[in-house]
Length: 433
Image 1 (cartoon, rainbow, N blue to C red):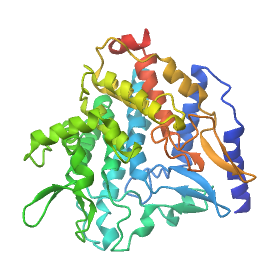
Image 2 (image 1 turned 90 degrees about the vertical axis):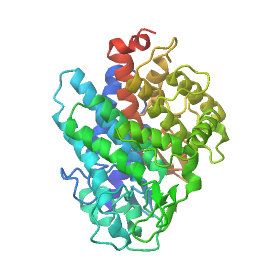
Image 3 (image 1 turned 90 degrees about the horizontal axis):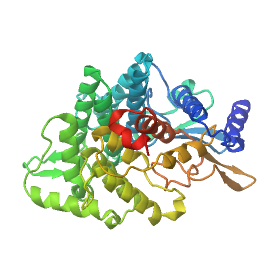
Image 4 (image 1 turned 60 degrees about the vertical axis):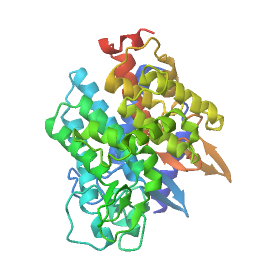
């Protein structure tokens, strides 16, 4: 164990001693390949069978605690959606280059099937061993120390699955923030992947995910809340979801192809409420958590914010405004992937595109061995900003330690290549600026 821990600590330390010397497209491509292989073979159990417990689910980070190296999965389905987005964009780029897409396509199939495993096994966590129907009520992870043999560097696994068996627990249950990242991945899959079975899986996952937030009581009252079907506990109250329910219904309809407008009463009111929330992002009292949900929903809906004319323009404006609102995060643009996802999904016919340099600089400065934080001689050492927090996608997590999964880099790199580097006619104004 000591030898294993020493090796892991050395690997983490290299992250911080490695400078981002290379400033070339080739170097950024090399970084992508390093991060992909590390994710697939060190930070995930790639079993090749998504029905196997704990497999095909990305680790968030590895960190040292109590002299042991811990693998952390407790918010795994949030990362799963972004991982699916990486695979969909990677598939598209490989296809453009005439490369073999089979391995990426299989990995995407397994990543989507993992949602089904987490769904079919959820009820068993609260004592119902016979329920296996896919209904959108899922667990966020199924990771515990039984998976340790598949992670030679890790001494302990931290997942919310440890709460399974506690029939009163409210942990490891679905919530709308898990859906936000998933919508992004599913939307890119439906746009960029030409495999009918995979696209059908994506549509069904979207349908079930939105349905899981729509509850009909025994007396027939409809409401937007997450209710545990085993014990009837309300896992996420209506007050949490209702402000964004127009967005959830709209996105669910777009992705699933089915009408997901669960509660038509007061439809105009909730559309008006969405307009207020969307165009006054700072109205959210919970800060960045809500900001990301509003922005992600807007991205997939292609819903132009007030006065913008184009959703992309609104997103860019808000992403810079949010960065100005939080200078402590040291990001020039917050959520930099969202405007690019929108233009990949819907194209762009506006007058001004964000220059490529915004993304080139982010990619260039990413540490060659990945981002992370560690403690040395009672001092906290971080990789240089803006790669100094858990992820560019959730930069307010600046207290997280260890080395991170770099899914943010991988998705941003693929999106940058599609929009700025491939010289596709539909993105001419981006690569010519």
